[in-house]
Amino acid sequence: MGKIAFLFSGQGAQYPGMGKSLYEASSAAKAVFDLADSVRPHTSVQCFSGTKEELSQTENTQPCVYCVDLAAAEALKACGIVPDVAAGFSLGEVAALTFCGVLTPEEGFQLVCKRASFMDEAAQRTNGGMAAILKLPDERVEALCAEQKGTYPVNYNCPGQVSVAGEKAALERLCKAVQEAGGRAVPLAVSGGFHSPMMDSAAEKMQLELQNVAVSAPTVPLYANYTAEHYAADAAAIKENIAMQVNHPVPWQAILKKMAEEGVTDFVEVGPGKTLAGLVKKTLPGVSIHRVEDAETLQATVEALK
Image (cartoon, helix red, strand yellow):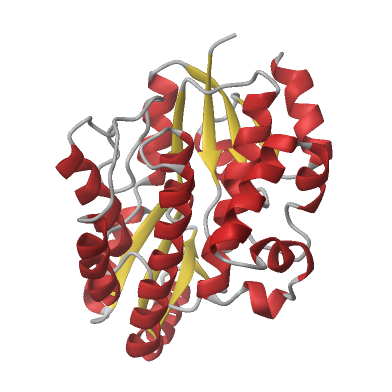
């Protein structure tokens, strides 16, 4: 067997009831939720019983998805499955940083709560949104964004799929231009223009917040969203990567390809949904793809990888 990668889910994958069966099936997963509840009461209740609308609010989404991501990874680890390398998509990077030992569990959860608050504040001030652009080359999407002031290519997800962010009126004009160019634009259910200059204030606040956070070198090789390279051991560089990913694009496709070049053959999405599993399938045909988001998928993945 080749190497194993853990991929930590991002914002947008949330759904009511997520994490409940993991909590019930794994003491390691339960410990993640219990710690979260001690810092931010009722986080587990939001995951297990919150409405779709409640979970879609950024200040709730990020702490809740973080918990399910980390709980899934810790449940796998408790079953003897550990990764050779890891990466988290956007929000998922904070859970990955915690799992890989860069942040303590307490600091990781506190930081994701702060991140959610900073990004929510920026979103409310900028009136932005996002859309996934399909069926066009990356270069064409970049050119269309350059033509439409106030829009930005932000997440390079897989071949033929780039997410863009922008002010809502500009984003509507961009989506119309995409259709005229033969592409397809799908609005995303997010509350702001994430990973774009519309998040500059959030990135600045993250930088200030991180001044008081202790970080350690990763115990598992971890790719950074900001650079598409491994996190270094240098504390200043670690903090820069954590802050800068908030208002810069996520080169996810490049990260996946580098993992494959490293010898990764088994990719495991840890966290709610199957978005990242789908991106792996489109980017790296032929690799083995697994998911852990509940007790059933935990058991299936453990059986497949042991």
